[in-house]
Length: 440
Image (cartoon, rainbow, N blue to C red; front, top):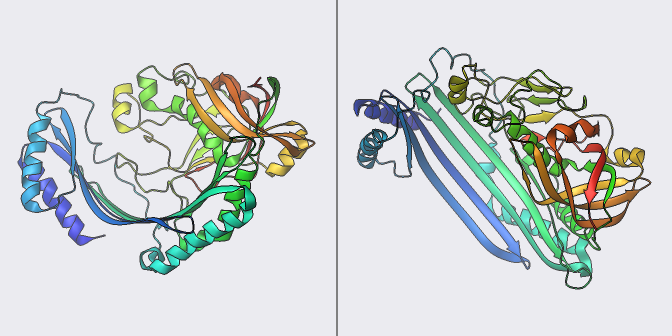
């Protein structure tokens, strides 16, 4: 734990309490980020920044206010703290807005989640540029004469966070992440210029895929979009590819949000303990995944992280309820949002799902769309491929799926063995039966 940061947080907390606050929480963040982007085989932009920021939660006579500042000089912070406490007096009182009790923040696991890679800090600038150059070159070579333009990039970040609160919370985390990827625009028939992309990320440099593979994949995914067109409206099996499945699942998860439930904006509000989806749908929220993008030891309220079964074979077991809404709903808090959300994988590869299905649509991307957390109704544009005998035969575009989450997820027929690892939501490819796909 950074002693300098801890001393500053403790000083800020003491000053806030001296200015009349009954409770407070101090969140201090130090971040270093390097972004490199290439276009036309030369650097288009290079950004490097080191920032520090402070967020202060003030609780005063049943009132709550939060303010932030990047200026961490004590002379400036004295004025900042005083104004934050004064501003809180003008906020309408909310008896539910408090810090969790000291008993609730006890029990944090003593686990090394392996979120920080020392190599990221010391990785040489020329090696960073080489990575991006290799991605761009591989994408251009694979795209061939269809290439209109290619953009390649990488982002290297280091974060150090410290939270200290008057209820006894002290939580320190250090994290690194590296993201690499490319996008490509291709010449299609007429004036169509489909754009595809591929990206990958990891906490540790050694866990990244080969840079050339990332560039090649970006080109392949773009070329697969050539010749895309509408099909006649039809009811048929649909496979949602792993890397985009979270977009569709997000609309379902919105119904499990405590705020939506309390405000009567959830289609799942009265469904706890009920089966609302296929037995193939089991969701686990696991904050303890080593090197995971959502891994943590405490949640946003400072409550100790817990592994939870959210859905078990289609049955709703838990909701995402933070401390504030648990008080409004007069129930025990769980957590305000997902950490690493894991959909239990199946045994078949994407290729096997397609082969066993025979004919259907593979969705590789979504366009626009909306989802109503109150009713569960959703509508979303899709791009992808029609496949016959398990083999893609035609790129499709400008088509649409509309349904209701309470009906749609009951049609989940099978789950792939390929959870998408470049996200905190590890979702595999999903096969749905009897889906109406609207086109011509």
